[in-house]
Length: 199
DNA sequence: CTAACGATTCGCT
DNA sequence: GCGAATCGTTAGT
Image 1: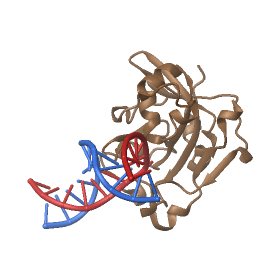
Image 2 (image 1 turned 60 degrees about the vertical axis):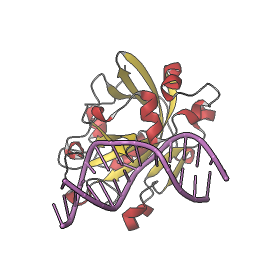
Image 3 (image 1 turned 30 degrees about the horizontal axis):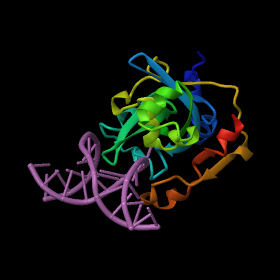
Image 4 (image 1 turned 90 degrees about the vertical axis):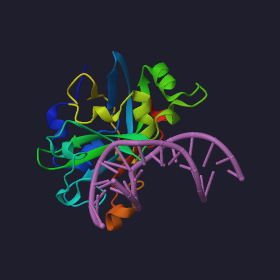
């Protein structure tokens, strides 16, 4: 067990956290069943100057309240009435930043992940959890996990020896946030190129 | 109370 | 590539 410490999440630079999370392992324990995968795609959201962020301009609602807590908590919300999206809350209390996990490469209890996704082994591992709504299904994350402490034993992230170099990263604008006007162009999406080929 | 809207995914063309 | 599915949250009446 090698959980990321609180200090990792309290980094004031959410874009740096999004980049640093690549190659770490997102783990869950659901009803005693453990599963997990390498994080291969992330996006940063900044509360103070980012129109794409749910907490833009100090906006505070019941749903996004946990974004204002100290870093190291989960923020999970329902998108399109269908999909649970998992975020890592970062920065210190009062500064509402978060990293959306958009893609994971299964590595722990892969059989269970296939079962939860309802697919056969014909689907390649790299395609199993390659979307923010897919990885929550595969790892058993639901909206009731929102505000969970990431240092607990339900959802957490483990450090690894995997080091993703800049040239292994694809850096692009974020997906699905056209409404954010000029902020839609910020290069705050990070994807590991061909993670399948690396490990 | 009502209505509009998603930080998406899947299936069909 | 396009459109439907689907419902909690949000803001406004």
